[in-house]
Image (cartoon, rainbow, N blue to C red):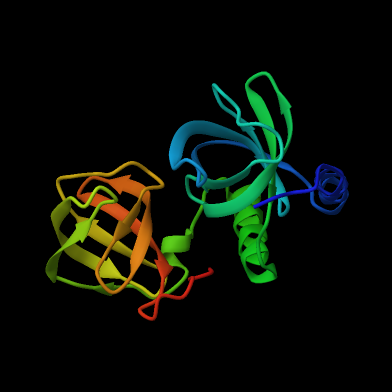
Length: 199
């Protein structure tokens, strides 16, 4: 995916005017689809249009990335500026997803905590089914479905693939977005018909 540098800079400037940045300081993960690498980061500020991120080795400017923010969920976007150990990140998302983020930010500012995450935006149903998922290297792993919604699945498993890894669930697939004490949380990427799932 190619991005025009001047357009990215103009969009970043517009975003700074349109959305107020909120200092947060939450852990996150950066996933680079081009080479399927993942890096730890810390999100130092957040707005409806983007985020400020600190990480050991910031990706180059105008790189398309997926950012996972603890408590807020998953965001696609492009890097817009860089300093040693820090970068700006402009979100590329639909209006509905941006509004969900603004609602979460408002709650965070008001209460200092997050009462909702993407995993709880849709009603979740308990489940006790067993099966397996398949990793990119073809390795099958046994698991138990703890609960499921239209957006994600929570699995009980002894193996915890890296955050950001795309796994095959049979009729659909998804990315690992969180590790929990019993296993992993998955955000669905494709529907049963193989179409892209957009939050």
